[in-house]
Image (cartoon, rainbow, N blue to C red; front, side):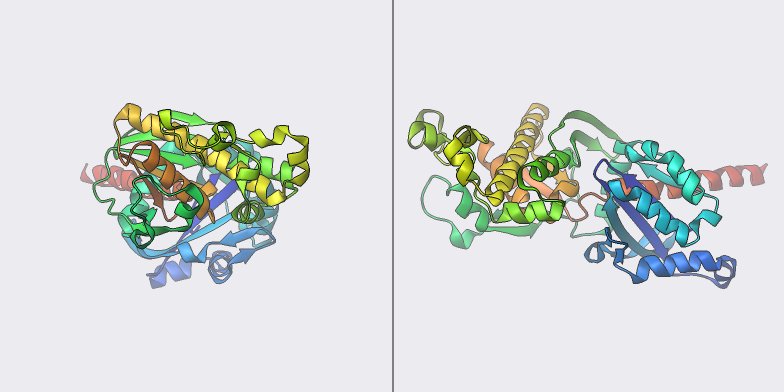
Amino acid sequence: MPWFGMDIGGTLTKLVYFEPRETNRREIDKETEILKNIRRYLTRNSAYGKTGRRDVHLQMDNVTIRGRRGTLHFIRFPTSEVGSFLQLARSKGMATLLTTIYATGGGAYKFEEDFIKEVNMRLSKLDELDALIAGVQFVDSMNPHECYYWEPNPDTTTDNDSPPYLEPCLSQYVRKPFDFSSPYPFLLVNIGSGVSMLVVSSPLDYSRVSGTSLGGGTFLGLCCLLTGCSSFEEAIALAASGDNTTVDKLVRDIYGGDYERFHLRGDLVASSFGQMCSADRRAKVSREDLARATLVTITNNIGSIARLCASNQNIQRVVFCGNFLRVNPLSMKLLSYAMSYWSKGALKALFLEHEGYFGAVGCLLHYESKSDKQNCTENAQTDR
């Protein structure tokens, strides 16, 4: 089989495929026509069925795994479409190939029998957090531009001692690369359907310190209920053009301006969805405003917990990843602004280019560690 790794999450399934570029004559002769067809299908298409997508912009060339150079491809589809994915895989002949694939995420347990039944494939399950950390460290080592942050454009800053109001501040943020070559310690905030927060002190020293059930799945679920949207992309598009101040109650709505004693600016959210207690306001609110308020609510909650965890652990670098951040620069800018503002500049919010694929990469890498162990065993037996 070609090399795969899978992360079957609560909302989205992530698949990474390593395509070796250097293939010798013996391997070409050994590779069956079915495997060649699978390779061609995966690498020559960017869409699979109605919902499967290959993120071509994330493709990594000249990657070395197990001493082989090749290309990493990144593919995703909604976990609700696992059945359709398996039918597609079966139609490509995968059911005739008895094999094992390393997988993580809750779906590796939930859909295990379906994989065996439909495509004759067994899932060897890996710990979710182990795979995540391994994937982050590997991808960052291979991609010098993996880590980045957002900061206000210095050309648009004012001489006013107080920071600019939130909306102008977000529109003026620009993306910049960050040198992550000496990262430890850092707080890793993985935002999927829910959220896990891990303190990473070294490549092998990490632990989960907190989390929240209010994550990307919450955002999408609430948006579907409140706006009638049907996809994450649609929910993000609605939020991007909305105004949460028609939905949220701000500090100025309560105090008439800033709450100076506690240094709370008037444009800060005091009560998420607090304006929706009024029937008149509910009648006037738009779908876009509801989506924006939902996004701000979820993002602020994640940022607040992350800031407290970082403060408790005496950590200055907070790294956010996960598919909640896909096509979602608004949340990244909100997190950047909030982390810096509430910590008085002590905390920096960092982000990763490959967002939610790290668990799948960690599973792919397990082939490498397993191969190393097998080689050591075979060499020891040969020595005897």
